[in-house]
Length: 186
Picture (cartoon, rainbow, N blue to C red):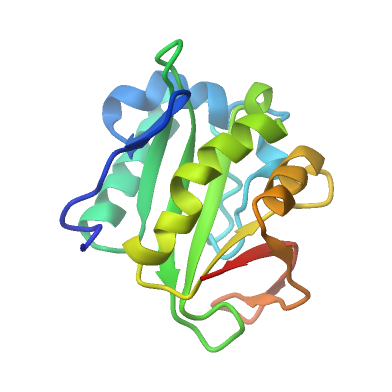
């Protein structure tokens, strides 16, 4: 399956993952304007974007770029929908990374959640939908995601799902070394 030709919708009893679209901007502004959530986002190697957006116009620009990125096969950005209240409560970005470092042949997963969903149970439920299936969706040998030390609930969920903290740095396009990655081997 080529995820850039046909993106699946993934769901369980709590959450639904689908391609992000312009109808999500109001809900997403609550995520990307959440000052408690932003420090836990992964902006590594993102050309200085801190993912803190405070206007609908800036949020629309981000969604437009994410749509363009999907159409060009750069990465997939999925909206995370809480099935109980119908709100978009975050996004997952993922792409296959092929570089000259430890994180080659890797599905790099970025999880951005509203702070009230930053708990081990919600994170585990969301990651169970995408982590293992990423190996097939992106044809990679491992999945990696970042969790800074302050993201205690996220780290708890990751380790419970079998992710292991890597001591290896992810090397950015400009040579910058990034740490705090957790990996799940295929």
